[in-house]
Amino acid sequence: MKIVVVVLFLMYLGCSPGQQKEVNSESWVLAFSDSCTADWTDQWFLDGEMATIENSEQGMTFSAGPENHNDAHHAVLWTKPSFEGDVKIEYDYTRTEEQVINVNILFIQATGIGEGQFSKDITEWNDYRRIPTMSKYWLNMNTIHISYAAFPMVNEDPGNDYLRVRRYPASNKETFGDTEVTPAYERTGLFLPGVTYHLTWTKTSKWLVLKVEGNDQEKVFEWDLSGVTPVPEGRIGLRHMFTRSAMYKNFKVYTKQ
Image (cartoon, rainbow, N blue to C red; front, side, top):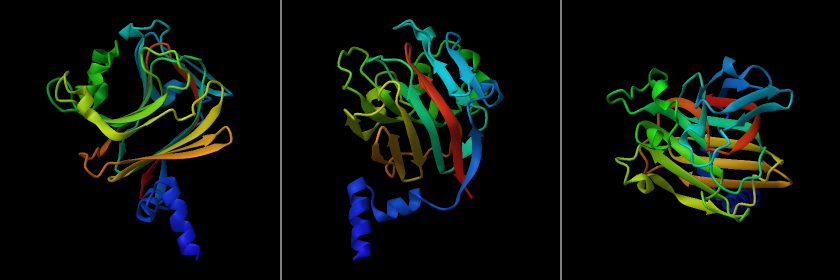
């Protein structure tokens, strides 16, 4: 009877028992930890010169530039370390604006495509990303991209948010849409301004799973990566499109033993 109950609960979460075993493995080892209350430059570096980052006892407030539709006002914050294999990323996330447009993005394990100036080590072409135009990333990086707390660039509905996963790179500027990994989730009811959520992202060779806890809710979202070229290593990145800002705290990355 207990086995049946457990299986039904996992099915409710949208996860198979085998997937849950893979995602909840006991072999996770802490590889990166930042309380986000001390100087951010100790463990991170920044793309984009219009961003502001402030550390306090409450966490790290990361704000892109305020000018909409100006690529120079995008920003990406990168971990200095790189991580190999399966990863689990968790942190507290609080929106510090009330925008109903534009996107937050998590990059999981980003490297360059290894062609021309875009060497695998993205620090070798930091200067190219001083203006962090979006196409510089999806054309020239190997990474998993997740849009969350995300809205269309033209929108007036505060409930019209979405979650969407992409696998970079696109083959050219006309194929950005082909980078999507289904499904997309719309109108999540999450990521409300001023509300703190605990986000746990788990990426294995076969699955990407997001668990969101906060505001008296717990929701789980999943994407099947078994048909996607694996992303074996790279840095973790936090991208804010122009006008977007949030506070982060207790940022941790785990890898497998």
